[in-house]
Amino acid sequence: MSARQLGWLDICRLGLVQTALGAIVVLTTSTLNRVMVVELALAASLPGGLVALHYGIQLARPRLGYGSDLGGQRTPWIIGGMLVLALGGFGAACATALMAESRGIGIALAVIAFALIGLGVGAAGTSLLVLLATRVTPHRRPAAATVVWTMMIAGFVITAAGAGHLLEPFSFPRLVAVTGAVTLGALVLSMLALGRLERRTAALARPPADATRTPFRQALGEVLAEPRARLFTVFVFVSMLGYSAQDLILEPFAGLVFGYTPGASTRLAGVQHGGVLLGMLLVAAVSSVAAGRRFVGVRGFTLGGCLASAAALGLLALAGMHGPPWPLAAGVFVLGIANGCFAVAAIGAMMTLAGEGRARREGVRMGLWGAAQALAFGVGGFAGALGVDLLGHFGAAPATAYGTVFAIEALLFLAAAALAARVIQKAPAAAGASQLVTRSSEYAMGMSSP
Image 1 (cartoon, helix red, strand yellow):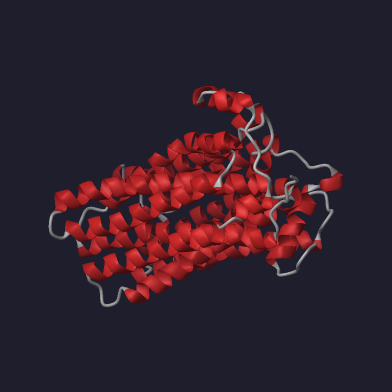
Image 2: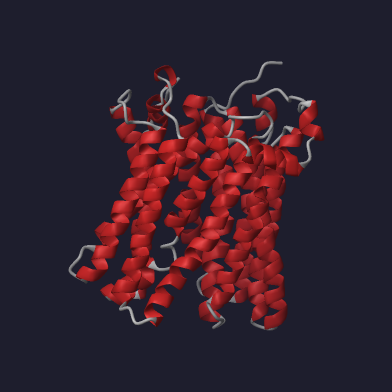
């Protein structure tokens, strides 16, 4: 039976799964974080450690991807991962509420819940990306990345706004009820979106005999032995380290150096996320206008996004030295645009490279890169905050401390650009990268393509 690749409606259905995943994650890493620190007056290191734990668990992504490689079907792993994620998200809310009565038991339950969150995100997220990489035609892969990540951001925004409204007036029973409704709704949405999708769009293929006999360590070693897969792993780690190191310091920087109020600094984060979304759509618009040009494509946008992110972070470092007259919001918006361009192009490259090399190792490759990303996010936020604290301890003024960390992030993006230039090859003219991103632009701008 011949296989049929995923169409635009199928890609949007997978985007709904990513929306559901983002809806659960944003409650656990944002809302519960605030409740622990503000309403429960706990040390900020507690939710920080729990979030770091959920990233640490995701180092198991290569093993999870290997499991889906063996069976040849990704849907059971996505649904199973979403089920574990939903249990973890609801458990985390229950644990937070329990901390008000029994702190020790609540914290112990939260550790288990955040471990489940990491496991669920790793299983569902890895297999979903592999399904996109293996069942979407090459010219649509960057488009698929744009659609799926845009829908994930939409999940962040919709959940944050809706849950924020439902949580007023705040109480712990209301927190548990709202989180339970979100997690159940996300799980049901995922199951409906995935219903018969994989089976209908491609013939079920029996895994090759060597795929079922190869132990995980050998399979991982085979992938690590592939020069491009290994180098791309380093690129993912370095770029995502630069991407995430400002997560915990941008709002304090705005408050300490520019005198922003808590509300104003929160809006500044919204400005940055808006820039990220615009950056993704900017890739679409530029590629549609400049289709066929030499430097327009996955490789060009990845390099350009890294270099633009480095420049924007360099300007933030200068902003701290210059002081409040500097248009901080505009600089943060530019950083968001650069990050958005880089992110969607890098994901498109990831989906393309996942299918290169030894067959039946797509899940291991995607899992390896997902683990590198998780490690970078877990280390990045902590390292950025620690760097500011250490510089302040040795007498540096806040502007100097924050500016130094921003400058280091800029250097990381420059290193990532050098790595991207080596690992992401130019596509042949017949199926050039410019055509790949052009398809992404057509979809993102609402123009259907055949």
